[in-house]
Structure formats: C-alpha cells, structure tokens
Image (cartoon, rainbow, N blue to C red; front, side, top):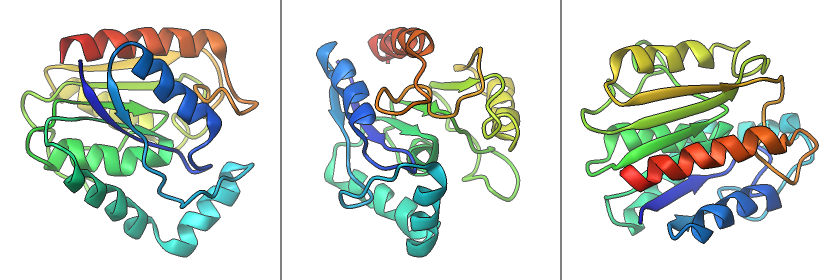
Length: 193
C-alpha cells in the first residue's frame, strides 16, 4: 500500500480528479487530495490559470509544498498539469519521497525552471498525449525525455490524442481508454514503490 499526495489541475479539484483518487483508493492505497483553490473550480483551463495568476503561481505551489508538512515523508507525489508544480518540487526536494506521478505536465531537471537534479532512488512515471498542444507544444515532453534519459527508474507514457486533461472524467476532454491504461500503469507503479 502506498500513500499519495495528489494535486489537482488548473480547473480545480473537480469531480473527475476526485474520481481518479477514489479509483486509486479502491485498490487499497491512501490518497490525499488537497484543494489548493479553496473550493473554486473553473469551466476552462484559461479561467483557472487566470485565477492562479491573481494569487501567484509561486504562492499556490508553495502552499501545496507546505501541505506535505502535515504528512509523513514517505509519500508518492502526484499532480495533474498545474498540480505537477508542487508534486515535482516535493518529489525532488523533500527527503523520503517514494515516487512521483506526473500527469499532463513535466518540469525540466536542468536549467532555469528546474528544482535541481532528480533524486537518486525516486522512481517516476510521466503521462501525456502525443499531440497535446500544451504537453508537446509547450515543451513538457522535452523535460520528460530529459528525465527519462537521466534517471534510472523513469518512464514516459504517451497516449494517442490531443487532449490535455484526458484523465479527468468530469471534463469533455476525457478519454476513457487512455485513462484506463494510465490507471493500470499507475497501479502497477504503486505496487512496486
């Protein structure tokens, strides 16, 4: 059994993010789903990102990082898109990390946006669609490929399609087949960490 700290995407802690967490819980794992937006959800990514811009990307990311202080250090950190910011920072900087699950987004481990090198012994899975204009078009796939090239236990999974939030069952971008495969891969990962 793994314990996971799962951060939502820029549209908030939607019913689809909650449903995904429930699927992981049903397999016997503990999943924490903090609400970084205090109950707000948005019907479009752009509206959610505008809200994040008002509060501040760094402020919301650091709020997520501080939430981990209330939990044991032996966690798997997971995030959907915007939620990758606190998840990846924690996986890379908080001692005791058991793994990372990065959905629809990825940050580089070198250069200006990096939190530093990937820690030794922390496995990671990265999931995105092969024609997602955000994941592919904005360079997250390059960051993912850098991690896979430099980290011993790193996997990048690409799914056919062009949707960003394909694993959120409450949104029109949901892809049930891709999500089923993603979930199976995540559960296999959690069984071994």
